[in-house]
Amino acid sequence: MLTIGWLSACTGPVDCEDGFGRNRDGDCVALAGGGGGDETGLGVDDTAVTGSDSGGGDSGGTSSGQPDWALGHPLVETMNLDLESDYFFEGVDAVAVNDQLAILTGQGGWYALDMASGEELMFRAGLRGYDLAYDASTERVWVGTRYSNVGCIDVSDADNPQEGSCGLSALLSGAYEDLAADGGRVLMAAQSQGARLYDDSDTLLATLGDDASAVGLVGDRAVVADADALVLWDVSTADAPVELDRATLPTVGNDIAFDGERVVVAVGGDGVVVYDIVQDTLSDRGGFDVQGSANAVALDGDYAYSASWVGYEVAWVGEGGPVVLGHEPAEQIAFGIAASGGNVAVADWFHARSFRHEPGVAGPEIDAPAYLYFTESGVAEAMTLKNGGAMDLELTIAHSANYAFSTDSVTLAPGESTAVVVTPTGQPPEEALMLTTNDPDEPQVEVRATWGQSLLGEAAEDFEMTGFEWPSEDTNAYRLSHSQGKVRFLAFWAEY
Image 1 (cartoon, one colour):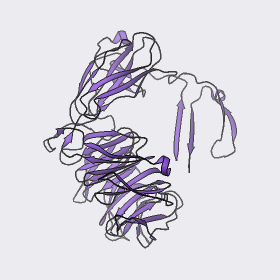
Image 2 (tube, one colour):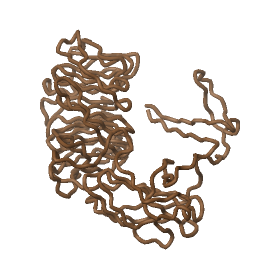
Image 3 (cartoon, rainbow, N blue to C red):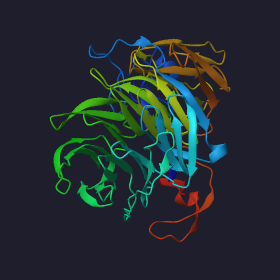
Image 4 (cartoon, rainbow, N blue to C red):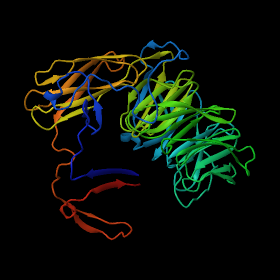
């Protein structure tokens, strides 16, 4: 289900403190350069914001435990296939079977690709999937449909994967979110019905926890994102599981990657968090930020990979980590990611993409807004810039006849961010502000300066539409002006 919401308030935001201005998201951020707070009205100082803004932890920093990275681009694309025109396939998850074969699933069926060569192997319509889990012991990829049964793909012949007769008939009273599989057992994150452990003959063995959103299973250890907690379980005695330890998550977990010794959890807008398991205890390693909201994660040795609404990241999670080494923008939305042997596959909505991870290289990563909106002539705005990589970021801003900048050069340490004051010298025209960087894969970045038509807190044009008020499903005509002086949330969605 895709839900998009809009929130309007009748009063504007409160002023930021001295030395801070609002960015395009409405957040108060420290401003760099300029010094003329009275001229811009933004209270400018020279302070940069260091470290992460989210509960995912700091994406930068160095440690003696980390390798000595060479400057380079760690993710090299090997395939980018548009699946819309030929298959109308909407990929939402990916799993690695070995160092070459990856399976993607989504609306319309499932898809197999060779991650190493970037070769398209096959597409099969019919088995619509939502989540995948691979069990090496049975050579099966389990395909969760979210609302009804669980199917499977036989990958014993890696050159010719086929839908098998195996499956789970686990019909639940609600949806389930995630699957994990190992040793002939399947673990299902069934929301308010807990994490349900099955054997591959469709027998329910145990229920772990109360509110499961993501799961991992290796041998006789299971990890469950249970509400806002990560819980480690001993499932060696399947009908009598034992809780071993638990740790607090910053929010609900969306996905888990687990290799038996390390747990990586995608926690949405809070990024990615990492734990080691030491003597059956969860040891918090911190985490890293992502571009947008983290949807999925994968583990490949000491490297973690994340997929979000905006892009993909590779991070070192070995000794001295976590630290982001590089990232790539998504074509549309990255819902699923898989990795093995340095090869990476991404389910990017209507795109299947694969990458080769170049070990031992890293670089700075420029994070800049795509747009900078201006509302009045001469009124300054803050352009927030961040280094999401592992090395110092150096950038310069090209001269513009239409805009003045508080500084035209910036150096940011890993994880550091700053805000540059941009002031229009006249009526704000449409213009691409050009940034030149030492980011290996983004040597030039455009920030589109444009005219903003409205602001948070301004009155919206009146309109009428059909809607309903829960719990009644009777439709009525609603007019915005009938809610004058009140806060209203408008949501629209599609489900299929």
